[in-house]
Length: 458
Length: 96
Image (cartoon, rainbow over all chains, first blue to last red; front, side, top):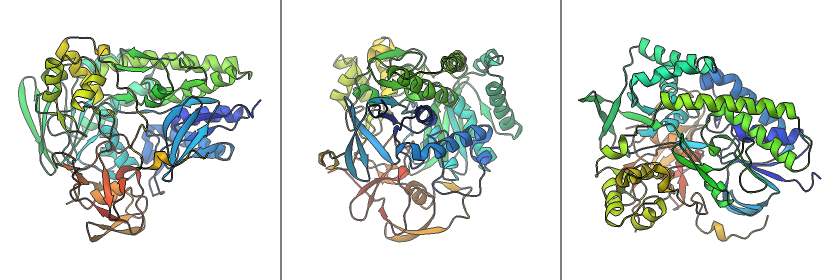
């Protein structure tokens, strides 16, 4: 039986590694393809070369989880077919096109587990393309993987648990944090207390981050409406409004983001049906509690299936593999399935609380100025997009892309599509889901010219 | 001028590379993005307005950090490891 079962796992973060482990334990040899040089995903990303820092320095309170995950991946390394630094750029039926070492090849699979993760959710404002402005995730990678701060006087801005975590990690590493600017009011944070009974560790840790930042005299502002980042060749300052007043602070770097958005292009190419997720304010692949998508043999786990965080990703990766095994005729441990599903349900309930405590800035779309760049690849302004929406009756993202090039650039809408959908909803007074979602196009990321024509030899 | 500030990894061995014709030093384990932005404050100029860019997401999603090598190859700086002898350019790269 196992000869016919040849699962492909895309992504080697918490979900992908736990999925691979469960398949290996059942006696299968899954293929694991990952863009990074080593396993861990973004949250537990490993350094390119070891240095003096300990796991505790790198991953803080999550050090034991990171270490356990890395050790698991090392242990199953010779029981899987592993392709690091490899991009799955297309999925067609039961084969995937991958780019590896400047060549393309085809990998055939019997089952597919997508564990493609997420990136920062971004909305633009004046100055967001100036050198020195990075996403919160980018600022964190600079520190964890590269041992660098994004500047000498860093402002962190946005909404989401990552805002305080990254600020705290910077302070711990010896960087100077000029301020933390939270777009949500302080009162929103009080909702976190409702999560205390179910997730005390997470809630108390979050409170500790804020308390420690304040104890070190780092200004933390709530209810911030960002106006602009100043500078040309590099960041010189940031201007925001707070309780009606304009405030300015000198800084040389800004890290910002508004929670996360799922990477869903491969699920789209695999033909998965999508549903609108109110909490994530985004379309995501439809899936059951086990991670089965609408396409037989295609499973999805982790933040690529809707944002739920790293702990949920580990559970969901294993759960998806158990579903795959069951569907392929293997006996699975029902008790383990129940444990995983209970864990996932608990985290989902806590996610509802987190969303209230770290809300999306829903006034942004109505207030953002026309001359702000919406699409940083094709350099299309908010005003150009609004004009097309109003004058040409554009109500949907793919139409907006065709008419204005928003989402047509190298990032393929990863950075601008969320913001464009919010503006569509605002301009037309329509629900967010009516904006639809950008159709995925292979290759899902830029690959060297000519590579796509380079044979199909697998 | 440098955009990024090194806080750790000072102990790792140096790697020589060339940036816009000048010999520079990075560290083992650096990405190309880190190696350049600890010496300079931009990676490229944007395709249409020619405004300076220095990457954004650092995780291979935004595609904002592409730099040119001297032989015309385009590499994504955030996901490419620095190698000895790399010859990199961050000059104008306007789309023709």
